[in-house]
Length: 67
Image 1 (cartoon, rainbow, N blue to C red):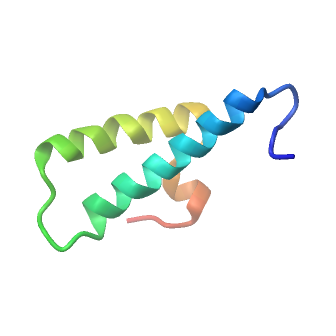
Image 2: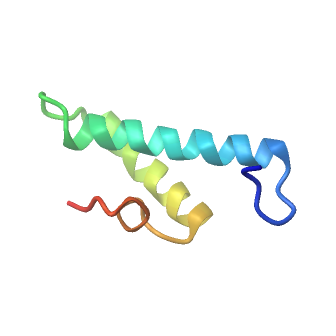
C-alpha cells in the first residue's frame, strides 16, 4: 500500500525509518530547550544529506518546515 513502483517492503520500511530519524534529529537540534551537542549536529548533517539523496528534496522542502 505504501510502496512506489517496484519498492520492496524493506525499501518502504527504510524510507519510514529515514523520515522518522530526520524528524527526531531535526526536533532535537532546532526545537530542544538546550544548546545542541556538536556530535548531534554532525549526525543531523549526515541524516539530512541522506534524506535529500533519497527523496530528491530537502527535509524543509518535503515538510514545509524551514529554518
